[in-house]
Each structure stands twice: as C-alpha cells, then as structure tokens.
Image (cartoon, rainbow, N blue to C red; front, side, top):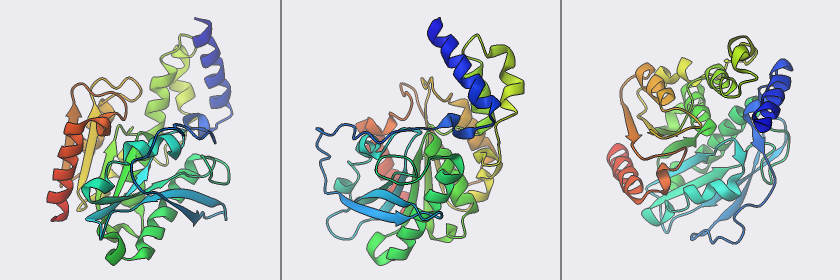
Length: 278
C-alpha cells in the first residue's frame, strides 16, 4: 500500500509541474551486457536537432537487405536491452537501425517527448540519406511509446514518401488517455485522474494523425494480456486509421513481447515480404 501511495505522490508532483516526461524512464546502464547479440552490430552517430549526438546500432545483413527497419524502443532502459527484440531480423534478410533518443544509453542530451519525435525524424533522415541501394525499402517499427512516435513521425514527416510500411507494437493512442489510466491505478490519485490528466499535452497524440499514414501500410500488434497499455489503445488506432491497415491481437501476449515469439516473427516476415513485394 505504501508503494502505491509513493507512486501516487510522485505522479501528483510531476503532473502538477506539467511535465510530460512522466512517460520517460531513461537510463545509461548497459543492460544484458553478457548476452550475445547474435548478429553483427555497428555503432552509428546521428546529429539531433539541438546538436546532441544520438547513438544507434546498425544491424546489417549479408548482402543487400530486403528492407531496413528503423526501430524506436519503449520508454524505459535503452537500446542495450531493447535491441534484443529485433536482433533476429538480419538473419531473415532485414537490416535494422535501433535508435537511442536523447537521454538514453550513450546518446547525449536530455530526454523529453519533443525529443523523441525530433530524434525519430533525424534517424529517418539518416537512413534516407544512405539511399535505397544500400537500405532497400524503409520500414518504421516502434514499440510502446516508440509505436506512438512511429505513427506520429511517419504521418507528419516530409520524408514519408520514403517509408514503405509502419509497424506499431503495444502503442498507446494518446498521452492524456494513458496518463488518466495510470492515475486511476493508485488509490491516491484515482479521484484526480480526470483533472490531472488534463495537464498532459496531447499535441503528439497518435490517434489524431493515424489516418494520415494512408496509403502507407500500417500494422498494429498488441497483446491481449498487456497490463501496461491496454489493447483497446491499438483498437482505437485501428478504428481511426484508413486502409491499408492490419491489426494483430496476440491472445497470450503481454507488453512488447510479441516479437519474442517465433510464430509472430515468422508471421512478420511473411507480412513484410508480401507488403514490400519481396
């Protein structure tokens, strides 16, 4: 009970300060340092809009990739742990650029919701600059908050013409809605969930722009047992999106664990091959 009280007080203080970084839990720890990645990785440095240097890992394929996926990870830890969710792709012919936005891992600068979107755009520009002869088609894959960022980035980016597909795994539909749901969990903040959630900016809400992704194909993935972000968020995104759109509900799935499953990995490769004409 004390734990929930402390959490409620922390949320109350952060929300009253109007700080949307309540969503972000970056760190600079090298997670899973002893776990082999199982594929070659190259350090990449990308300039952020504010001049910060962003660290990313490029996971190449042998020969020309079928496509390159820009991977935007979730709101906690950093790519040293999240990269393991996509490290299987190069062996299946798909290269990956896994990004740490500002404040995460070895990337410079301070974390923030604005920075997440700006840094995703910078990484996409880096890939576009390499040329399709080296990257193949470009796909943006985001997980959790990264899924919301992926949707918003592609829907509004001047570089959207270079993107061949968007994949959002366990994404939430709007910042204000997820804040209200989290405030409803501790007893201390439950009565204040509506007024306090109004302090959270919704100017980056994915649900407001998801229809603009069309005609780029959109794939939504969500575990039905996700207790971090309810699967109804992806349902709202799907309902608001225009064709071509696809929604995979994973009956036994939890939060961002779909890509750990061999059956889902195989299904994703089939989807990419079909969608990209491979």
